[in-house]
Image 1 (cartoon, rainbow, N blue to C red):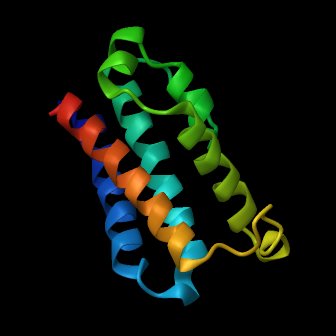
Image 2: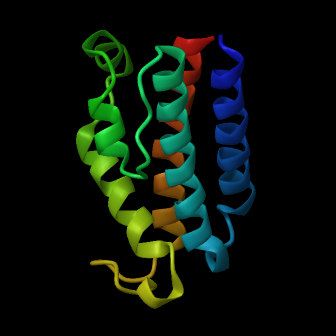
Length: 131
């Protein structure tokens, strides 16, 4: 693994650990969703880095995922609907002016745990590929 890939993964693991630490407290549900999205974003950027693919300046995980080689996508078997949901939850929970504007309201503890689980699964798959 490249050193730069390792750096991306170190940040990925910090985000997923932060989401895990906060996921059972409803007060932090938007923060859990934010860190869950960040973990997926950084994990995909890590795999792009490992394969020397230019990493665009975007937070859109669907766009980042589309840049992966087809072989890697088939190994990951990631549901694009889940990536789309992760993109939506990120943009709608990032800033206070947008809180509560989700189509389903402020994210509940249940929603936060759902996004944490999706993100953890994706991060684990990517970690296994690049190790």
